[in-house]
Amino acid sequence: MAIEPPPCAWRFPPADVAGDDGLLALGADLEPGTLLAAYRAGIFPMPITGVPELAWFSPDPRGIVPLAEFAPGRSLRRAVRRFRVTADRAFDDVVAGCADPRRPGGWISPAIRAAYGRLHALGWAHSIEVWDADGTLAGGLYGVEIGGLFAAESKFHVRTDASKVALAALVERLRDAGGARLLDVQWTTPHLLALGARDVARADYLRRLRGALAAPPAF
Image (cartoon, rainbow, N blue to C red; front, side):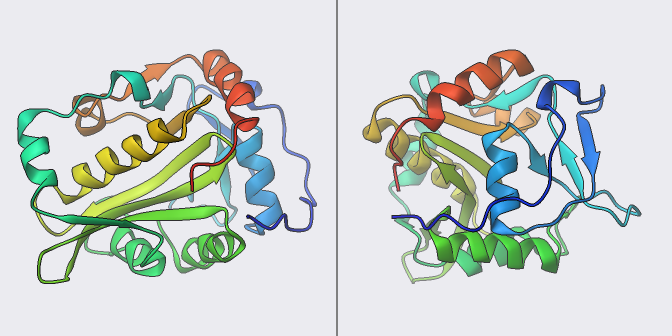
């Protein structure tokens, strides 16, 4: 069972007053209580290059993966059979893979890595690992789970299709748990859209969030 940390020391603006670019606020900190308060309110952190203060976002539209509509294609079903999948076996290694500075558009700083490591130690952040047959970490993803919300933060792969396999495994786990579930991917990309993600209006996202937070966790 996850451990509730000390409460957030900050007061965030309402999520629905964010600007056109989704930016809601600058400042605060990365303490566990701050992060949980933000996710519960539909907000997430994302550093901005060249800006010393931490940025907090609530984009409109918001990217989600509808669990009932996720249908892996034939190539992904074949890829699943090539790998072994686990959960919470190598959280730090997955975050390190996501934070690889050689990846384009990298945003995961040492401070972010440490913050989500603290959340993991408290039982709020989780990883899906995808392993090659020889035991090498081929890819994975990590995110934050609060009730029926899973806020997917980042994924990576060093073997073709490994991050897709991680997403498919996460969807299966969330589906199996039942109840109101919300798989949040923040912003959609062509890659995520091809995997079944779609955009929803911020108001719709916040409505779904309220229902999901009351569900029991899947991890």
